[in-house]
Length: 133
Length: 300
Image 1 (cartoon, rainbow over the protein chains, first blue to last red):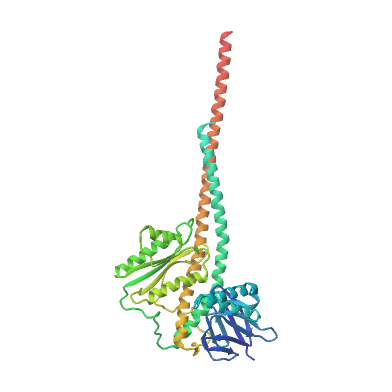
Image 2: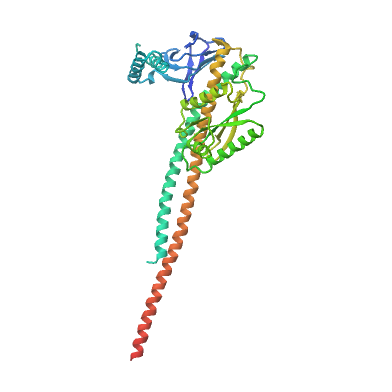
């Protein structure tokens, strides 16, 4: 079966690239699953989404992806994230701490957009690291 | 010891300590260039992908009608983003940039366009503040190690003033392009309204595929184009950081060379003076001894 060539890049570095059987990402429309021979598509990713890359014989690759795009063409999948982090790279303790602080900020003030964003991002980081949020 | 000798010794000592400083600066700059180049390399995949995505969207939508791509017929105001360095000791780096920016300003003003400078880097900000030029925006503190957040901040300000009702009609960017360790060029690019730069490599298999959009072509374009502008600015910042270090290395190298040359000249001069002094002393002693011998001979 055909394979997908996947590249996950952020402006500051290339996070991961390699072959995969399926890519699951979260766009503003909802979850999108991409398998080989998918029709060309460009989608806008949500803030604080979790990207899942399924590979044969290997554990799933999970990454926290904040904003950006996914573009699929001719079995090539590029995930352009504004910021991204592999689940294995996440500092769980720091993310939990940041999440708590953001939640405290949300509770103390009604509409704090920055704190909302921060909470979303850190929740995604924790989910990517395999933690329950 | 002669006064001249003491003076020369002092000069040599001071030049030596200057040479030590410039040599250290040179070495620091050399190691920083490598890191700056690595950061430049690391940013390339994202740039390539985003350019491909933009090209994909643009080739799919028959008429790209987005505020960021529409050029006004009679531009009245222009913004110029000048990317300078935070610290000095880098030769003509900032002077070249500012000269180019002034030339651009002259060109635009001769066409009846009012120019607002946006300046990044302490040196450029200082230059504009000294001349009491009003700046549309100023950013300092990251010229050596720009992060994407910095680029985003700049891009946000620029896009905002571009979108504003009586805002800026076009935006140019004056920055330094890093060609190699030895060559850096000042370049002027127009970033808004956007001209999508086509990738140099031809598509592998004919024309680009027909894309579907999630949620819609307009929405994708809405968030894709600002990202594209950010990525262009980020790349300019990274190139500028690498160029700054390369310019600094070169300037410090020639400063060290000059200092060493000065030390050589001074040392030679000092030896000459010392030798002259010794010769004089010897001839004085010999003269004195002769005079003593002569007077002793006269008595007998």
